[in-house]
Amino acid sequence: MRLTLGQHGLARLLDLTGRAGAWWLEEFFSLLPARYAASLRGKARPTLIVGYTDGQLELRLRSAGADVDEAERVVTEDAVAAIDAFLSQRDLDRRDTETGLRLPEELVFSRELALPVEARASIDAIAAQDLARKTPFKAADIHSDHEIDRGIDGGRLLVRQWVTRRQSVERAVHELGLPLAELSFVTFGEQQPAPSIRLSREASKRNVWQAVLPALCGSAVVLAVLLGYLEYSNQQTTLDRLAVEIASAGHKARQVRQTIDQLRARRDALVRLRLQHSE
Image 1 (cartoon, one colour):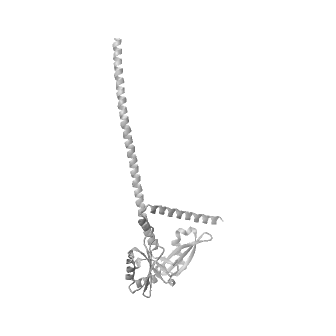
Image 2 (cartoon, rainbow, N blue to C red):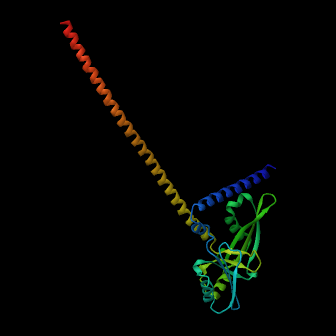
């Protein structure tokens, strides 16, 4: 019973930590212009899904923030030219989009993992190790990806994992004539939501944080400069106030000195009078 309560408590703590991090990022993004904030979130570029079967090309474009896809079917032998023409009609090119390749559903293998909540921070490593240990796939021969599907009873997480052969992706890319480096993900079949494997999963994470971290470091530098300026301004204000007080004290000191000199002169005169009187 204590163990169950501990797991639920940890799950709640992780959830609160995730919410706090999301809130902090949203507050940071709210300080930036909308265009740059959207770019840092990774939501600025539209998504282009390319399907190619027996010379028939299907293009499906979803703009950032839109719920409706723009689709077009083209019978062509030059897929790259058709893609460029499709994007050019919408004032885009391949560099402006996150491009994905749709493959037949039979080319993907799916599996599920049930993991304890405590493993949330290490799911990437655990999923890769479990895949290598329990399946015949070799890491060099496959593309794989996963997502946390939902929680299950007992404070455990259900992780859904997908695997496809690199050979299948490379063959399809070769038929299209597209550089493999331009593909961001591979999706399978027509069902929604379709299984999806991000080809540059770790690179995309680094790219997002490589964009966010300089901004955070820049904001820290700006804050440090502002704090330094405020400190300097406060010191300068204090020095100016002290200068005024010193000048005022000097004026009062001169007045006191004049009064002392007058009293001293009167004392000397009184002493002389007493001497004359005694004589």
